Image 1 (cartoon, rainbow, N blue to C red):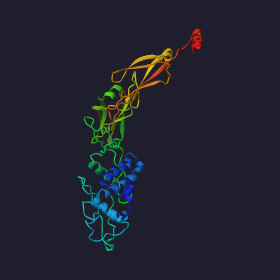
Image 2: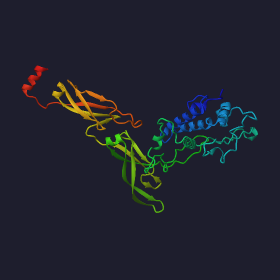
Image 3: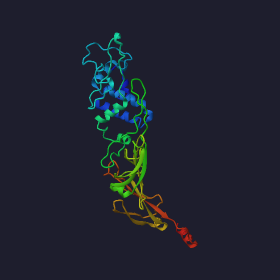
Image 4: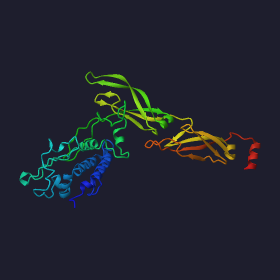
Amino acid sequence: MVADTKLYDRLSIPPTATADEIKKAYRKAALKNHPDKNPAGAEKFKEAGEAYEILSDPEKRKTYDDYGYDFITGKGGPAPQEGMPGGNPFAGGGMPGGFGGMPSGGGTRTFSFNMGGPQAGGRGGFSGFSDPNDIFAQFMKSAGGGAGGDDDGFEGMFGSGGSPFGGFGTSSRRAGGPTSFGGAGVRRREAEPETTVVEKPIAISLEDIYEGTTKKLKVQRKTYDAQTGKQSVEDKILSVPIKKGLKAGSKIKYPDMGDQVEGGTQDLHFIVKEKPHPLFTRDGDDLKHMVDIDLKEALTGWSRTVATIDKRQVNVSSAGPTQPTWTERFPQLGMPKSKTPTVRGDLVVGVNIKYPTSLSGEQKRKLKEIL
């Protein structure tokens, strides 16, 4: 039985959780509460980092399970017996600088923890947990960018733009530093100016979004010479990838490709706008096409041939009467889904009934007789 479950509770996992379950739980908590994404979650982000730092190390986890949170933080709890198997992972030594060191290769992190008796000052040697930003950065590095299968939010936090001249990568936050954290034992960082973002609209046709393409765009950006304090303007040609099924409002991100200003470089975000189409309107992954029919056709029947976005033809008809709300749906003839481009939405055909602007007396009389 574990001494307490405080650290497990922070990650919403049981004390029997496996190493993989601990990693997944930390990733979920860190993403949800990362200050870049959720400023109000800074404290929970710090707490999740503390929990992961202990529970991800088998030796430290065992000591925590045996003696509890108060013991490892020097707030009390039973002292271990001398000669404890495996030694004390919280004992001093370890990396230069005490507990702050983080190995680049993903190895164990080391506490600087004085385990002397009362004459030696009790457990007062605990130097605190690592900075939660360092824990998160090390986790990202060891996890290869946090890849976890489904879209888990890393792309949304750090950008999907990457290099404008080739593949994609995570965004560099050169001008905007990590959020400062308070609390005992956590290194404080001075607040740094947040990276500013330049947003530019980019109009894309439905055909290009359906096919997927790459747009070459010429942009102008200001450059700043820190030595002279002067600014100049340079032209850049950017290759902008348009993924199949991309939706209006999507952002294509280019870190450090905006204007250079004193203190840093702006990020450049292209905001996708859909060009109006003569035949279709888009509703999510569906495409809607409206057929014009007159009142006579609405009452007696009609037939049309409709072109699809991929230049096929479908026949649409109704024997009448046709209600203004009439639609017919053609599966898999809409837009590709951005995450699964081989799957498409539907083509939905509706009607726009053209009513006559005037009727003669004779026409009204005959309609009354018929209807």
